[in-house]
Length: 528
Image 1 (cartoon, rainbow, N blue to C red):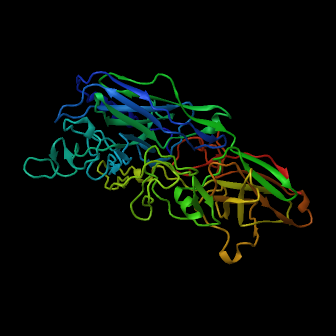
Image 2: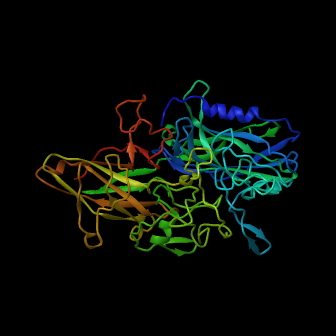
């Protein structure tokens, strides 16, 4: 990520604001909808926090045929905001942070019948292009006179007119066509250049006041935070502001979105055995809800580990407000193919009324605005939680570890409650999952190379405190002097100044890679 940029992002925002034409839209009042704060790991540089949800009412809806007024929405944390950069463009850094309006792809009960939900339609998708003067990621909506339909996910409509190029109608995919309800975030550029590290903004968002009897829901999701700057048990707080040409009242006090707790406790449980224990019940996480289906069996109210070792494709986690327990992924919908939504959706044991999936995964690949924001990668993690063992041994000492290690709950230690598998990685514990075992040799110890052994969690119970005992074999004349430390992985040392000779000088800042990632922590322990 470039640390110094021209002020084009700011200029785009000013273009949006300068383009306001005063409308008598009246007073809109937005209040916080309480969401339980997430419990995040104090060692984490990019920890997923709870959504910020605002419920807005009041004002005067936009008349039919008028352009819905645009606003700029900003979310600020009390620590660095480290949501993944999805497009490290020359001028704009787009973020996986996502604004959803009026809860698209959510269940809509009508008596005892569940009707199809509002389609999710992102700004920049086919049918809702971002090819206006304000640049990529900014869309325009024309009202049809009903504020309940201003975010209904309709494609290629402009007010009450179809964008089909017939007669005087506008052509397909022209600016102002469509009624999107998902908008990409971007890093905010400071007035003097550089990035405001704790801020994400959503520029030029159509904001149609719902009227005195209506409600408009704003949900900001896929926010990740640097927890290392807030030692346990400090809170992570968020504050939302909106720049508009009409009055919008917002909560004046910060909203708590997370609590920081120590995520990993390490010890030598017996000679030659390293014990890693969760600091909280959700500290060990698999990558995606699909891992739960693949490696556990539903036993109400949730799932129990069934001995599986699968590494399946990720499934869409695409129902707003649903907490997918124990997953590093956040809100995401990559495609309707190999990463399609699960069935049923949300899955059993996860929550809520089931939805009939709508048609539009997140997508900006047609590059209407000249840039693919890669919104389809929003919320997608790089791996499940990884545990690294760091060994220091004398030359000639050979260290071996098992390729498969089972998790156990503190309450019932004799039962396997989850599993983690040894994987090949780079020197920082990052990289694609590459199991260092085969079914035929699953029980054979693996020799540790370069003093590093990294395990990835393929399933963990998200509601119970768990631990894993990792037996270590060391051979050689001076094996008794072998020491070890344990940490989360991938791990990095944050540089004090940009350009310093560190593994990743932007570890505590938004980057395009390695989500999750962690500080290099852990004390040396004698193994024998």
